[in-house]
Structure formats: C-alpha cells, structure tokens
Amino acid sequence: MQQVMLVCRPGFEAEAGQEVTDQAALKGVFGYFQPVRNSGLVRFTIGSEESPEELMGRLPLDELVFVRDWFVILGDCALPVQDRVGAVVGFLRDQDWNGTGCARVEVRLPENNEDRDLGNFSRKWVAPLSKGLRGAGLLQETADAKTRARLEILLADFGTAVIGYSLAGNRSPFPGGVPRLRLPASAPSRSALKLEEAWKVFLPEDRWLDYLGGGRKAVDLGAAPGGWTWQLVNQGMMVTAVDNGPMNPDLMASGHVEHIEADGYAWRPKRAVDWMVCDIVDKPRRTARMAVDWLADRLCRYTVFNLKLPMKKRYDEWLVCQDILVRGLEEAGLTCHVRARHLYHDREEITCFIERLD
Image 1 (cartoon, rainbow, N blue to C red):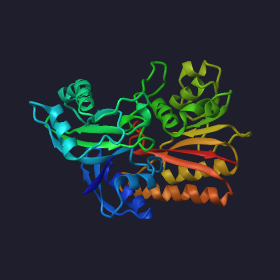
Image 2 (image 1 turned 30 degrees about the vertical axis):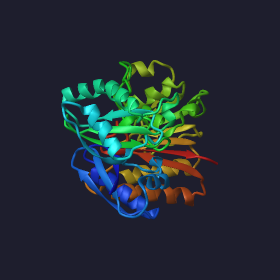
Image 3 (image 1 turned 135 degrees about the vertical axis):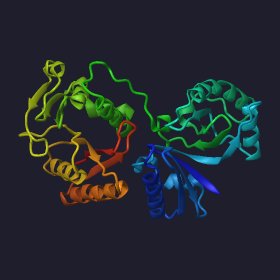
Image 4 (image 1 turned 60 degrees about the vertical axis):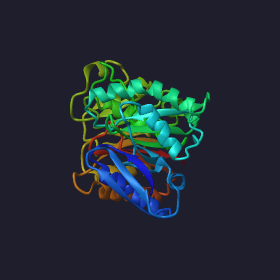
C-alpha cells in the first residue's frame, strides 16, 4: 500500500480526506482515505499505479485548503523502550531506505497530544535519533537542510511511530502547518495572529516588503476591537477601520487609524486602497460575493478575508464559495491569484487571499 499522511485541524479529517480524494481524481490519481476521528490525521491510500511522489507532484500542497501539511508514509514502527533509535534504524534498513537526500529528521506529535511526558521525550529524542541515523548513513550531512527531503517520525505514543518523509518544496514551511507566533501584549485581540499567519502562508517571504511596505492604505471591515487593524498599522499602513463597535483606544492613538461607524458589508471607500481585510462572522457566501464586488470595482488590489463555515457540509460550502469567487472574478474580466487555507489560528472558518494581477 502506498500512503500519504494528511495533517489537518482536529475535527476536520473528513474535509481533508474528501478534498484530497476529489482533487487527486481530477489529476487522474485515485484512492481512498481513512480518518482518525479528532486526531488531525488522515491516511490517504493510493489505489492506482502512481507513487506518492507523483500524486504530490500533480497536487501541490498550496492548492489544498483543509490539508496543512503532509508526508509520504513508509510504514508503522514499534519502538521498544530498550532501543527506540535502533528500532527506527532497523525499520529503515528493512525498507531499503537510501535516505532520499534527507538532511534532517522531524519528530512530530499529533496536534491534540496532551501527554506532557511524550512532548518532553520527543524534544529530547531528536538529538540521539539524528546521531544514530547519521551514523547508519540514513541522514546526509548538508548545509542546505531546508531545501532537501526530510525524514518524518510521527509519535502516536511511546511505543509506536509512523515513519515517512516529506518532499522539499511541497510541504509546509512550518512542521505540521503550525507556525510559532507570539501575541504581543499590545495586540487588541488574538485575531491578530490570524492575519499574521495568513501573510506567512500566502505571501513569499522575500516579497513581504513589496506586498506590505511603502506606506500602503488599507480597509479593515468588521475591525473592532482592532486585531487586524493593529497588524496593518504595524506594517506602516494607514487604515480605515469600519465597524459599529468600539476600537482599542491605544490603537486609535497611533494616528494611523480612521474609525468609521458603519456596516462593513455596505460601506465602500471613495478611492481605491491597496488592501481590504475582513474578519466578519456572517454567511460565507455573502462574504465571498462582497470580496468579488471589491475586486471587480477595483477598490483594492489585495484582500484577505475569512469564510465562516457551517457545522455541517463544511467542505461542500467551501466548494460553493470557491465557485462564487472564481466565476465572479472571471465574469468581471479580472485575472487574479486565489488561495485559501484552513489556518492553524482559524477555527470553523477558512482564510482566503486574492491578489488582483491586472
């Protein structure tokens, strides 16, 4: 069996599995998925002749919404307490593993792991495991570890591990799709982390200044108390914050924010801005249509917005919203780059980014 491990938010296993099943079929690769309920892990088994590498090559991670990260599964390995490192070395040798250019090993835990002892062990185990693997010739010494394949060890508990490898250029830059972000005390709300994560996921790291710098202008719809406005201001932007609710007083004192008390869905600027962001909790189709209107009327060049999905048929609702976005932009005659992802800091919503290219 050739399998890929899909990593998603716990509780969204069915959405992640269905998405990969559907998208892979469109690329001519057929298979089925086995979710582990509320684990954030899904095994996708390839039923056709294609290899996992071929599947992942045809279906880039950037094109998926509910899958945060993934890796090729080599198999399941028992970890005897007497010699866990030796068990991994023996397993890889039995698999005729040649390293596939791997320069380092990543020890993962399920996102919902609550065993602190297992967490402490996983961190301390990396060094002796790496040493043992290198000594056995199963990891390669290289200075460009970020650009090479990576050996993946997923610890279910102290006695079992799923072993595999991830491919350079087609995995999350953050193991498990979880960026380590800190919330400064000055941020008005935790929602500030969502916009920061969106930028890290959607914008090339070497082009942040192109997208966010140079004194750009932005509109934040549904801004109160100001988590997303705070992020925009920190990039040096002048921000129009639209919300009937109150804004954070310290943020307003920055001199970079104009607060307009109005309905975010109905309000429109007199002049175009660079960014429109929206974190309003409402029907997702309404938000999708509003985003299309802003872009069609050329009121913004970039937009980040959230789509709050219903508890049932979340994947189906995303497909409807995706159709609204794609068809709406095509009918407006626009060329746009559209991406969406269920971010780590999202809950029942997904975050979309659209860049107008013309």
